[in-house]
Structure formats: C-alpha cells, structure tokens
Length: 167
Image (cartoon, rainbow, N blue to C red):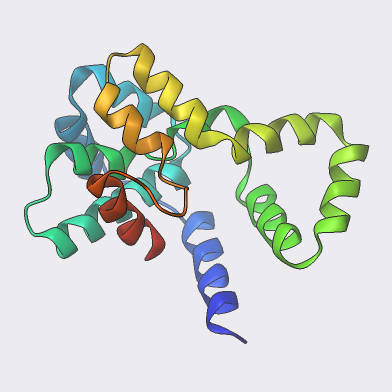
C-alpha cells in the first residue's frame, strides 16, 4: 500500500472513531471566544476532532502560535458543516475523486441530493469564509478562504496548511 493510501486509511479510522473530551471543548471555547465557539460546537465530532488535532500540530510546530492561527486550526473546515457528509460519504468521495472520477460524476448526476451536499463539501472554504465574515471575523475569514489554494498569500495560511496536511 502506498504512503498516501495508508494516510487515507488512518484518516478514515481517526474520523470514524473520533471523540472530543469536555476539556478539549473547553480549550476550543477559550481559543475561539463567545462569538466563534458556537461554530465549533455545531461541527460534527469528527470535524471537531480534526480541528483539535490541527491545533495540536500547530502548537507543536510553532511553539506559541498566534491566536489567529489557533482559531484557523479549529475552524478552517467550518464550511463543511452544512454538507452533512458522513465519514463514509467523505471517504467514498475522496477515493472516487482520486481513483475513479468518472464514476463520481455519474453518481453526482444520478443523486441530486448527494450532489448538493458534495458541492457544499467541495466549496467549504468559501462558505466558511462567508460565515466568518458575517460574524465580523474578517482576518480569520481570509485564512479560511485560502486554506486550499496551492500558493496562499498569507503566512498564517501557509502555517495552517502545513499542520492540516499532517492530519
């Protein structure tokens, strides 16, 4: 099995078995503050776990990461919340997109409800940025908006991408 495939299997397992402790929720609430903490609370447990893991990686890599970077670690995937994609949906989509894109396209054409959820999932960076802009978190919105582009302009985003890529 290739390193990429092993990474994806591990990622599936981490998402499928995700747990978040009350202490971790309290840490997220402290980092995010009262305006942003409800966004984290609305995420599925596996996305909360992922955000906390990215936060842990950011802290290990950066030592004393900025509050903006910590918040971005926790909320970079906030736009996925509306997709209501299960771990299986996500894994299947990632696999099909990489290995069998024509089958994915056929599936999207045959299942309009799944296609709508997929569009949200695929466009989560823009959706998350819009949500954050609405709350007045403009700097954070800028980081979230560019966290999937190949060459982000913001240094904070480059640090986030490095940590996210390890999770």
